[in-house]
Length: 376
Image (cartoon, rainbow, N blue to C red; front, side):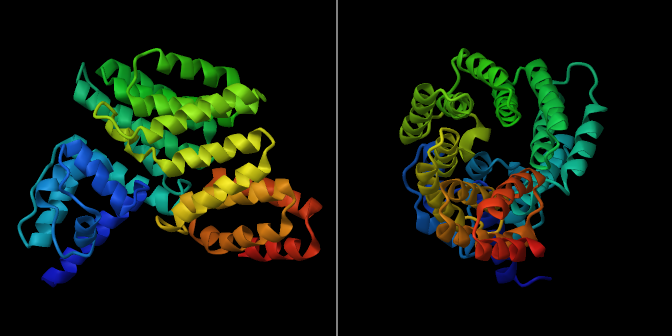
């Protein structure tokens, strides 16, 4: 039998990994747990004790599952192992599927979606084939798996397939009466439309979402998509207004009506969009400043994960557009270990575009550095 202390530390490390996947600091996680449970007794120090294996969350497992977007049965099994008890069993198909989905997302956050997108498609198609009659619970599961498969496909730069998955997710969510999942699918469709240059479609989706009396965090996400779409067509004034509304909404904190999936929308997400909007509005200096801040935040979460690849590439993009070659060397060098760990085709596609600008306009010493970093 494993040493009890080792098992508890392993469960603590697992909780820490879930927190980092959700892009939360220990203080932010404590604040969200307090908000969801309507208590003010939890502190960052207690989160730290859980993650070191010194204590178990016990009564917080259900709230943790909500905030970290994982099945509660998954946490209960881990806690049971940490206590040295027999693990609670949950053979319900939905719990099994959601646990698989959780591992796929964990892999994506660590290494990118390229290698797990096809696995997600397999789970999605398998569950879709089991739909019979009007089983709304199963329809919700299929909608969620389709949404996850779509995200992994999008990260793997398979945008048309991602779009198809999100369209199906929206359809099944609507059939199941799951409005929050329907909003999420629409938001992701708006994101993909912006990425693919279909600005009119993105703005139409944003208008449709905000016309439904959505919760604050859903409205915040919609403003992020709207700001990027408006910036893409050079509408400076309205793009700045939209990103300003998103920042103000974040500063107004959380709301109990926010759906479970929206907990990951945080300062990092908004700051990154502020930087991207500035880049689209031909303001590389402001963009570089904002991306430098995202670097500080990502360093505390996972400095070599998929998020690090996205934000480091974006920071390099801003500095190259600015012609700040000396400053560009640092994020370029930082990319070395990240590229050895992450295979996200979407982000690597952007990196290749940035590097073409370096090879065309950059000084010889930076070109040499770029070739060395990307050689491995």
